[in-house]
Image (cartoon, rainbow, N blue to C red; front, top):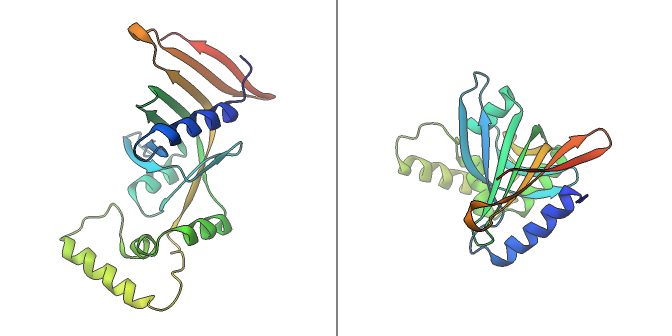
Length: 192
């Protein structure tokens, strides 16, 4: 077998980008708070390579709170059109400010403004309240660049395990597991 899991991910991700009708970079992010209570939600992969997998969020959100209390996470890509999944488990850390600034600058203006206007994951009394906050932020930044809010940044997931799952007939699926080792990666198969 002896594949590099990141090279294999690159191949599968390129195929997903060509075949998935929507958001091939969508991944489920599973976290658990300091007490072990799990939560899962969809986020978007915004960078990947041998260093790991990157997503961005409000660092005052529930997901960020979970991560700050328990840095172990799991990611799941499900590409239905290809009948494939990739499961990733590892530890997360905050990306450097320069990296977060560079990504934030690529977002649409409304998404940038929304990062300032939203108290992500907190109770909201009405949609009108959020829209008024958005309008106020829009006026505040009128005629100038929108800077990255101090509470908004990214996380890098450094994997310890990466599993590649391929659907096969009669539920005789193929599962390849890469586990981080001192000298790189150990690879093996799992029963379906």
